[in-house]
Image 1 (tube, rainbow, N blue to C red):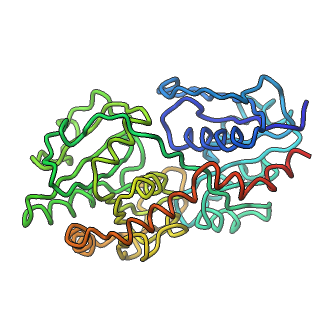
Image 2 (cartoon, rainbow, N blue to C red):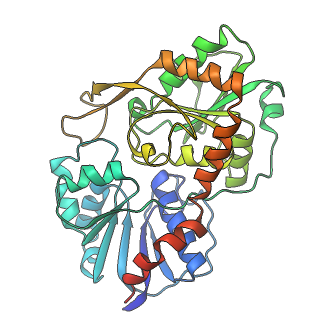
Length: 359
């Protein structure tokens, strides 16, 4: 067993946010020249993301990092206990998306020696339940170059229209991602200004029919993208938009918000939870909210908890403002904020921490 690298365990080739956590951490290790091995946990979409790593190793290293939910970590320990018995140091890169971390998942915190998480919001939820070292370490968000297509032309959107974009997973917790509020906000605005368009990119929705999701409206100014996109195609989709409209009730991190910043979009966002680490009045248009209790079935594994209910009325006002002002200063500030999440920037910031695990 060697001490000069990391074992990365998670959804390495699946198009999931947790999979992107692993891949972006690998990108940071690549930049620093630190070797790593990978254990790719199977999913129904395994293999859809192609990876090519120079420093990929077959070695068994002394430190393992688990990029997954705490619940998955518990189940994995039951199925493959050797993964938890062999390494000298175990790190859990855990995500949680509510203010309260559930009691039933506390045993997952006991499986690892240290805990990393992407934001102070998640850090507080976890440290309320454990005294183990818990660090807020946001991972890189990789900006890919666009190679097309021209999505405005492909979707029939006029070149001079004002386009909002929202990306969500149809199999995620929809009440948390809250695309319904994004749609309601858009419909409130487009009835008075037909130059507004909305693109909804729905992940893990190949073959999806609108008939099976009655809440998704048929409106000439709402365009749906459901196919799997390569990173360069996703970059082209961001470049087709002017604004990113996220009225989430809660986010542990908010990767697509950072991606939108990196591509220079005006970000309209609920002013709550993880994104508060990097969104502010200087780089985004923030939307107020009221406290709302999380109902049974709204979020898996949770104890009684709460999240935000963003104001659709205020969001509509923000959307009108975004089109009217173009928010040039905010767009420039957003780009600067997004650049702080590059692998190079975060590798330099966290290099001492990473090297401390290799001694």
